[in-house]
Length: 155
Image (cartoon, rainbow, N blue to C red; front, side, top):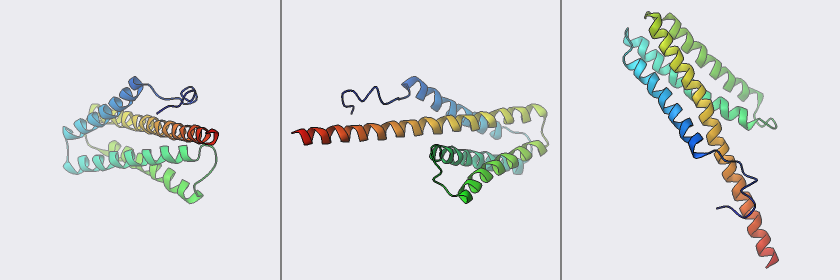
């Protein structure tokens, strides 16, 4: 619900952009899953990589939120900063180490590496898109509330 004159103040992503972001995320997750499902080698390696990808995925979302929350001023403690950055770097390092040490052909390693990096980049883009939509909704609600309050005060 937009009040007159507020739509120019609120910047929203286009439907095409949102579709592209969601499709990129779905495609990257699918490519990772397909690569791991048909990965030659030991089941333990496949299980390690699944855990690594999930760990990277969750820590990337946490890092994106942390950075956005602290964009204008620091709201989180230094210890939380250490936990978020440390978790992300640890997830990336362990997943990279697991991929490096796997006894598979270099072409498979390259495929898994590219899918993994695509997944991480699409997570950051998706997190930003979702947060932008949330911020736009919040701003619209605030402006709408102010307009309603002004109308009630003038009545």
